[in-house]
Image (cartoon, rainbow, N blue to C red):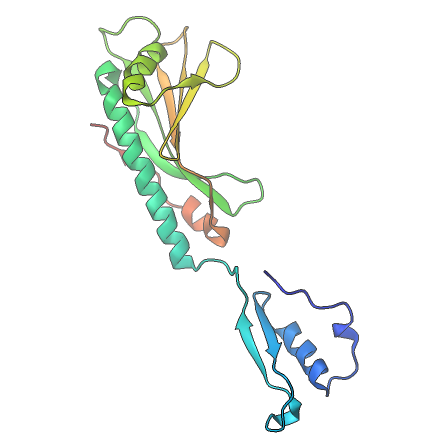
Length: 205
């Protein structure tokens, strides 16, 4: 938590005093660092000893953020391969299935990893493909439920291990589109780095 300077610290004219020195130092320190003063004592020059200390709640290091992002990406890919592997017998993934980072906050600084693609029905599949997808995944514990009104297209979703699985199916068109996404991560200034990564093509078993 940042320590805001008191309103009068910048206006004091007692720059030579201990309190004035503290105010001056605080203005030069980054917001996540504060200055603490120890009680006056006979062996302390000027009657004060000051030290800079990092405040609690500081942001994670870039390496920690990258590690968290890599773990989230790997988890989304693992769930995606598991779910799409269950659906492979229903048809083919004619278009590339890709994984990429996307922003998840209008102000930036937050991203999520998601996998998108399209499943086209095989020759033996009859009826709406979305219904077959629901019936196939239900026994695995992934129970897709409609999101909002509408039946063409219909969007269904479910959550597995903090990963949101969403499919969109049509009664007037054959394919089913899917979007499998992880949680929204607070990555700060590293959002551009992650968003700049090249999309990854998945091989569905």
